[in-house]
Length: 260
Ligand SMILES: Nc1ncnc2c1ncn2[C@@H]1O[C@H](COP(=O)(O)OP(=O)(O)OP(=O)(O)O)[C@@H](O)[C@H]1O
Ligand SMILES: [Mg+2]
Image (cartoon, rainbow, N blue to C red; front, side, top):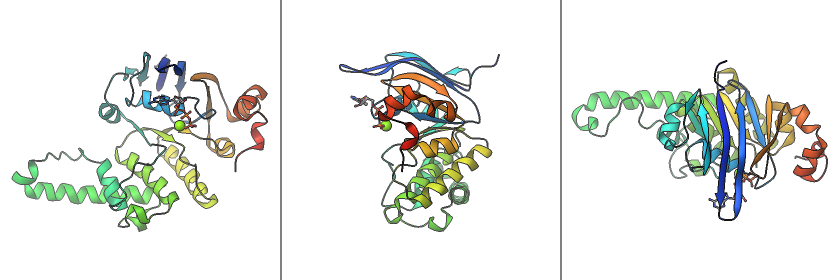
């Protein structure tokens, strides 16, 4: 049997007296859109941090395509093919949308700082190539017309799309999105869901933290339900939504009755 695409096994993480991740284990399938759900404070962002090297778990491990990645630096994990977004967008507000994407591409195209001095023509060509690629990525997420707009002048929905563009700039195959739909208008939400499906069709694998149950029902192939740092259930959106015990934990009521 081949190794799972992403395999999280037995992760524990304690912050002082709080067990934020408690023997957390799951796998995700290549090519799937997997939604990670669970109440506030369940440990969703913490598991993203553990997978992507932003925090070191107390125990447990993460394997990506059969290779152990726990303990590696965030940069090495991005290079291995996993990129993540943040709940607070972490964009550069005072530079353009295109420049934000170019920042995500840093280190590609064989650029070293000194080559600008000694090989100016090569560097100029590399920069032109980067800008073309950057514009292609903005086009993919529907932001080409805003390429030269300063980020602070983009709408919130556009800024969220730009965070995804920045992930695409890394060329990672597995994208971890932390609440990409939160705060979006109905129109922006539809654009986001269409984008996520296009990314899936283009061969990306997505792990998405999502609170809106309608979004989960519409986009998820698999759902992971996290509670108190532990994976309580894994299944199809239909199976997870229909489970009254999970609904009680999540909302103290029926799952279907909630979400904007
Ligand atoms: N660096 C930290 N130091 C101390 N406690 C932390 C730290 N990071 C997270 N926690 C705590 O760990 C628990 C899990 O937090 P986490 O941010 O992973 O939850 P979440 O599922 O992403 O919640 P939300 O839906 O609100 O984003 C919370 O109780 C949180 O306060
Ligand atoms: Mg979170």
